[in-house]
Structure formats: C-alpha cells, structure tokens
Image 1 (cartoon, rainbow, N blue to C red):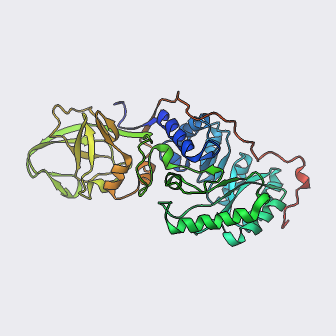
Image 2 (image 1 turned 180 degrees about the horizontal axis):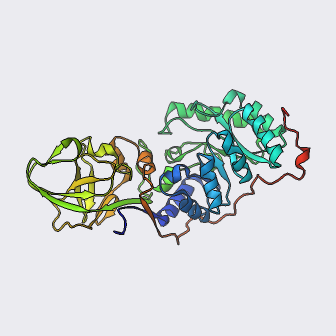
Image 3 (image 1 turned 180 degrees about the vertical axis):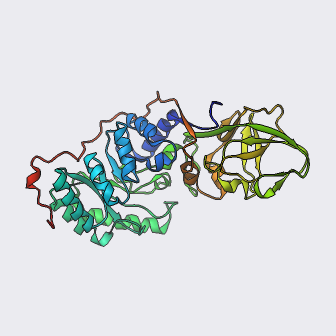
Length: 404
C-alpha cells in the first residue's frame, strides 16, 4: 500500500508476464503475439507495459493512433508497431519516419502513401485490413485481392500483414464470427503465395479464450493480457489482474439516521453510522454510475467490504465504514484489487456500473499515479524483433508511385 498518493494504480508486471505466457500457451508456441496497447494500454500505462512485454518476447504492438505509436518509439520500443485504425493526414509522415506500420483500408490511401514515401525516401510497411463484416474500416472482402495486388505492385510499400476484425464480442459459436472467419479464410486461400511472409491476424482476447479456430500465425490480444476478459467470455482462473486501484480515507464523520449524503441527497443514512470521504471520483476511474444505480458497489477497508453511498462526484466519493472498527483517516481503500482475503475485480465494478471492463480502466485520469510492481519475471521465451520495414530505399529517386 502507498498512502503518499490520493489515488494510485498498482501495475503488477509479474501478472502481465504470467498472462502473456497463458496467452501463448493457448495460442500455441509458434504463434506470434501482437499485443494491443492502445488507449495507454487500456489505462495501465502503454510505455511500462510495452517495455516489459517486449522483454517477455511479444513480437509487436498494436495501437490506435499515430501519437500512441510515436510515444512507444520515443520510449525505446524497437519491436514492430502497427496503427490498427485509420490515420489522419497529419499523422502519416511522422509515423513513416518512425518506422511504424500502417493498416491499409482502401486504394486511395495506397496512392497517397506511395506519394508520401517517394517524397520521404522510405518504404511503408502495411497490413491489409479486410472488412469481413464489422463494417467500420477495411477493404470489402470481395475487393481485397485487388488491393493486395496493388500493394505488391507498389515499390514504396511492403506487405507486412493481412488482418480482419471480428464484430462478435463473444467469439465462438456466434454465427457472425463464423461467417467473418469464412470470408477471411477464403481471401487467404485465394491470395495464396501472394501474401509472402505477411503476418496473418484476426483473433482478439475474446476469440482466443473462446477457442475460435483458425488462429492463423499471429494473435492480437488486448484485455486478456491485463487479466480481464470481455463480458460473455467464461471466467478464466489462470489469468491474473495486472491493475489494482486504491485511494485513502481523508475525512470521517459520524452521522445520525436520515442524514443525506452527496449530490441530490439520493442516499440517507438508514441508521447512525460513520461516513468516510475518499479523494477519488469519476475522473480517477470510479464510475459516476456506481453511486447512482443503487446496485451495491463496494470497496475494501481493512479487509472488509463496505458500500459506496451517495453519488460519486468528479473528485470525491463516500463510503459507509460503520461496520469497520478503528477505521481512520489515512487508511488505504481498495476499489479494485485484493485486501486480505477479499478481492474486487474490474469486472465486478463494471457490472455494478452497467458498463464494460474496458471503460473502467480506460477512464483512469492523469491524476492517478501508476506504481509499478515486479518485473523480474519473464515467462515467455525471448525472441528478437522481426526486421522493420521503414528503412530508406537504396535509391529513392527510382520510386514511381502510381498517380504521380
């Protein structure tokens, strides 16, 4: 425990290593792990997570924006980094200069990339994003071979991957997932040797832990690496939570029966009790809804579960500690994590708030201190990063992009 902070998140790197090993075990030792660390590694801290994951043998990283990719490069991450989504125009040049790979969705982006590469004298590594049914980004599956051939003809581009994204959150057994994987597999079969050594990936945490097949040669987990799984996926006891979220008591007040607490006076003391105020609010990752739904959110104080009462505000929350003998100002309070024999998971908090685990961890504001624990354990066999693709071309003047 660390009472030097108002709110802090403990990041357990040993749990991360353990989870990555479990992911590798389920996927097969020959599978590459392309770890998704977008949204600051789902609130866990992308730089610290990526550094340790690289030591653990992760083959590459997926991010959501150019800025996220550049942050990892500036921190010394040398493994391949892929921007999974769409880049805005201002992101393209700095991403290419930093040897970051790009998801390719359409022919017009291909032509634009060729021109930019010619001007910079670099080659862009691209992953062909095949839209098999999510409908958000990517080339339609029936046009994917056409775009693949265009990539192969473009001297300024190098095919580094082929990918798709499943729409079904629950993965296995869902008809849409089966249909999507069928479309993607047919594309791969039709493409044949034209794919070369490109990484092929489509399975996320949900699909992997549902046992979806085929797994291709690369898996793309995110939330499972942090010890969580999406709603609807069977609980996996072998995963360990990476994040614990804690605060501390800053004020205590004895109140009489009927005393209102918090905005709107939505909660009144049912009897004489003691109320503790915590310096944590919805800017710090404690959802506003847990104080408004009446669903019974709890935290841990001195190893005991106590209820959150009244509405959660931006900066503060209140809890009823009348059942905790000796509760004092300065006592640590666990919102997510273990205290004694009791454990509260992110999934528990998300369920009470009526949301998903992703939203809870991604909402940890910048006021939350990240305290790193462990990091000596490396449970995956080390493997050298595969070669990058953003190297200058031997003779940039020879580039002749289509459309110039």
